[in-house]
Amino acid sequence: VSWTSDGPNGFSAHALDVLRGLLPSLGLALKSTANYTTARDLLGVYLGGDAGARVMSGDILRGSLDKIRCAILYFDLQRFTRLSEALPPETLIEMLNAYFGEVVEIVERHGGNVLKFMGDGLLAIFSEVGDGASRLAALDAVVEMRAAMTDINERRAADGLSVTGFNAALHAGEVLYGNIGGTTRLDFTVIGPAVNAAARILGMCNGLDQNILVSSVVAKPALAARPALVSLGQYRLRGVADRVELFAID
Image (cartoon, rainbow, N blue to C red; front, top):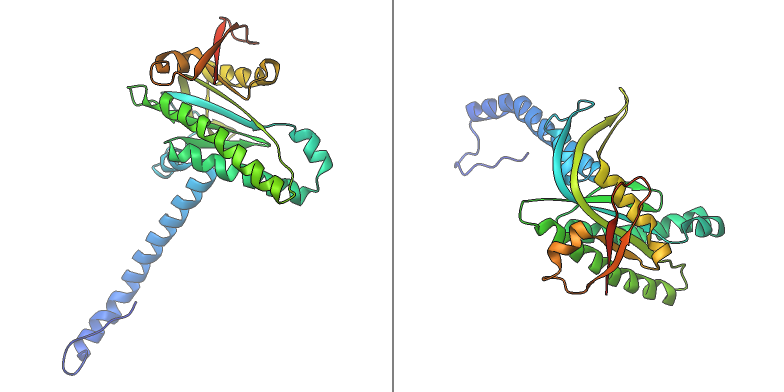
């Protein structure tokens, strides 16, 4: 902290005593604010913006869960196992960072929150605000991802770097959102049948030769606004009782 004075003789002795007496309290306040800002930023980086804010507000008890409605995105990179066996670890990490860096920015730009990375994939949610906007935002995000992945691959191929494709699945529904885990290690995530269904839909991408699959829960309300959605028919998903109609994005 720097202090200046416009007095003709600078600071008086009394003014200096006041400032010196103020410094310990001011230093403590500044340190507390800096620590809070650091903790908030770190939680945002490792947990995501929304989850980090919830933890900072005191939502830290195991089993503390909220019911929310959201669009769910599962994303993963193709042929990752083969690539991990063929590439040096440093090259593999560079490739993951290059792809994930673009994908995370797209998710967040469309109002989503990345909850976790899972090897070559990630899980993100777009919280429902009651008017279906989150589902449209999720759809727009995966369309932008497809274009971004094409651009990344063109740049990487031109530089002689390894490239790969991606798969993405969109579903929506009610989930439990909060703290799950052990007494000394928690994960802030989402669970529920809708999350399981989204994971199963992702597993259908290769079999249907589509890199983006969207459930009817997301697609049907958006058909008028997003006419590129094309029905692929109804399918049985492992562990899901009812058939699910799946859509591709033309």
